[in-house]
Image (cartoon, rainbow, N blue to C red; front, top):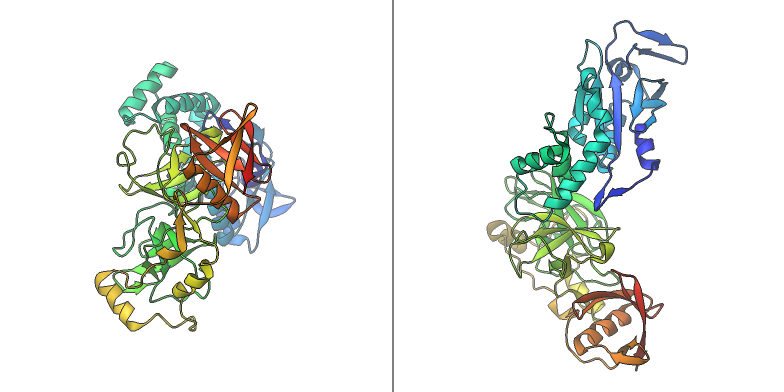
Length: 469
């Protein structure tokens, strides 16, 4: 019920920071003095629910009604659904993915509940007793203070806990004895903390691959056509030897890549991500953009990073070659903190001709690639197959195109600079109803071919464009 409330409830932001859902559970988790419910054979206590007994006795799933014992921020929980162990695991994973915190308020003498304690730990919530209820009542105020401080330090080189605590004291006029505000500030300035706890964007412990590497099937591939014969990008590690990959077809899965057991489901390739209709995608190489304000957190001017995730609101997760990972704006509120570096596009007429060279052999799922590659991979980790560099063209190439693109400036039509003209025409040839991003006069614009307009996303102004053969 709590999860359903979070999913269907309103979503919002404090400045640039998304508001997180919260679930607050009040229970003593005990069995003393429990009373029977006419609607359920499972024991209820005066202060809450006996979770252990329910889990021990329930074969499927059960729902118990609560009155004032279950509360979420801003409204009352009318019930809570407790499943068997597999169901609990599923709900926990779902709540973590939603970045929902669970607060566990301990009531009565028997205050130990291993399931709830684990859920609190997984969701980065808090365990409180009834003497600390004021912390819940002040949560909205604390969240506002945390957001203000996070906004002040998000681009600062000093994000130490000591500095943050001092700012909290100055903002609130009091200390932060339970670190409630401190924890919120740290999460606001590091919005990937929840995903990292679930294995996304974490550095690998194997030697044959790194986070952000481009990969294809390796000598121990046993997974049919999950990759659709495409390359993919390493986006994290589930556990030691279990690597998480997002394939260029959009699917994500996990694979064995273990040095100790010499199990290599994947192999590293020097193959760029090819953009088709996207402005940016997982696997793209990026550099700092015109709105970069993070100092040298990318490793310095000219440093490259790999996109590990693209968010629908216009933000991307980037892992820099210096091994730092962060969330950056790529179109959000018209800001571009990163930009694509030399993104290749498909060259029409050549893709199918060359892609076949990199398809895995039409063998059964249990067969590996040839023995010579297996020996080379396991001894040196180097690739032995040439890569398809000749079927991609740099999107910023200044090669000649026949069409001329112009934009309307007052009563005149002005021609785009040559390099931008090439980029627009190639994007148009890829998809005549699509769009692309250009940078001109230190301003970023979006070009929409179907409407034939150029839009400045920062102020939403538009100009007409046209194409002349």
